[in-house]
Amino acid sequence: MSSSAIVVVIISFTLGTLLALLTIPMLVWMERRVASLIQDRVGPNRTNIFGFRLGGIVQSFADVVKLLLKEEYYPAHIKTGRWLFMFAPIITFVAALLAFMAIPFADTLNINGELLRIQPLPIDFGVFWYLAIGAVGVLGVIFGGWMSHNKYALLGAARAGSMVISYELPLGLSILSFIITYDTIDFNAMVHFQTGTFFGFLPAWGIFIQPLASIILIIALFAETNRNPFTVAEGESEIVAGYMTEHTAMKFAMYFMGEYVAMNTASAVIITMVFGGYQLPYFATEELLQHFTAFAVVMMLVLALFIYGFIKWMQKNNRVTKRLSNDGGRAFETRFFTIAFIVMGVVLELILLYLAFISQSDLERSISVAVVQVAIFVMKLMLFNLFFIIIRWTLPRFRYDQVQTLGWKYLLPLSLVNIFITALVVVGVSL
Amino acid sequence: MSQNIKVTKRPVNSLKHALYLPAIAAGVKVTFKHFFKNISDINAVETLRYPEEQPTDISDRYRGLHRLTHRQDGSEACVACFMCATACPSNCIFIEAEEREDGLDEKRPKSFFIDTLECVFCGYCVEACPCDAIRMDTGIFSLTGNKREDFVMDKEQLLSHKGAFGEELSRARS
Image (tube, rainbow over all chains, first blue to last red; front, side, top):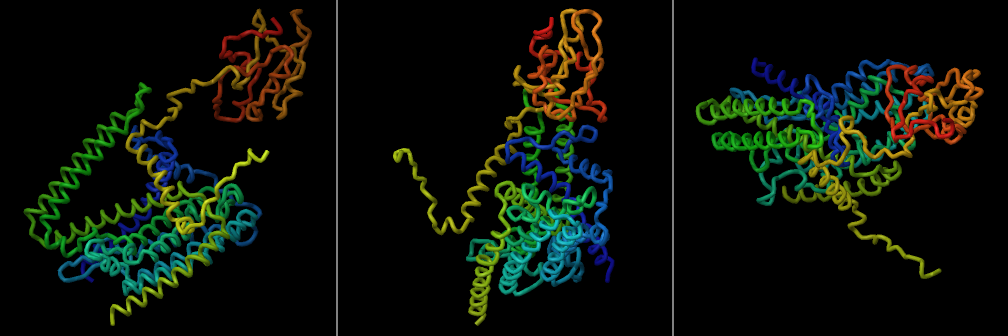
């Protein structure tokens, strides 16, 4: 193992951990702001550090501090299995976190003939890893609800159990049809399959090649992450907070954060299997490397436009309404970030300029393509997380028997038919 | 009678209906429209920017924080009859009576506590009072404190609250 390999492993592992953990406050903030914007409200925007509000994202950190400082309360009626009661939220959290680690963030790097995966866990059986680890997450929910010795929690856990039998089969079967189509269980190879075009004009994404399996996969993953419309394990009006009724302070926070990590993981899996992963549509990594100068010039233009648009949007929206006289330091914040973004943009443009016209090194080019791919991956991830959030604030909740009906009567036969057709087509093509 | 019956057309059992996905798409379209409109101009959101902006629609019928009214000479109008404490559904009014020396009335409250954490702001005390001595017309809707004791109002605090709608003195005892 060369030193460059070690560096790449460390960097991709750090990247994966940061992407999974730092997105939690991001997602909590996004959830609250998007919910309020959908409902014609403003949302949390007052918490600040030295006047910096960052659009309200500081609120998430304040919430974490609040949960950390809260009293650790153990329900006295739990006599046996207290360790499992404490351990259950950790199972949910860690399972979601580990499942995320099999996702490739960029194409395999070729450093002096050595092929290095940009994947926190450099494994080539990512789909099985995800299925195995992802399915463990719900055990934390079931244990937590069962060990609480509380009727609401027990009902929540029972509902979580009923959810598992509803979604696991369609999930596995839809992934099976993807495995048949892509002929691989490696996430990276799946992304490779999805580069290029389908019928000449569509990007060869899973959603166009396998539309039915894609929809079943998305529905099943919505169910697996316990997101609306499948939040049957917790139902405010019927069973209080469901399985987490007895969990307080940081134990609750583990469940809460685990939900967001699971949502992030589900988004990453959906993107990797269905929406072309880290790849730009129509362009494979090799093409980007061949026409690197043109690619870098286009990137410069896109970056300049993006930063210009963002600054315009910030100057328009980081203001108080005209009715108020005191803006609470928003003008200073806007000025600070305008300058910061302009400086950042100029530095990035200079780097791109250097890469496009001066540098001739293959290594620098492939690394910069990898960085761009990570950026594309994060952008797609955030867009799909936004979709998760918008769905949550659009749809009402299913009853748990309705989820079972959906899973067993509709999704299961559909996914079986889909596997049959997929197998026929794959065999027919290969004949 | 029959001409008043309105027959509601039930939704048809079409494939589009059974698929459920077109309905989800329509719902997402509505929510996304709101989201996009508000994210492109946050100041178009019509909400009250509390606490910088205070509500302007508090009418004289609004049941705010309690106050004890005064007589002409500035003394309390309350005669410690315990009607409010009896009418109170949450038992949050605690009165101790004493003899009144100035000849205006026979009794006066020695102490008068309202535990506003217990209070449900139903206004029954105001209805029950025969002397117009307790009122809820202060317009105060937000009450803050650092400890529970801060929320127990004593006689001096209740007497110091001003009426928000012009009427200061008790109309029954002047």
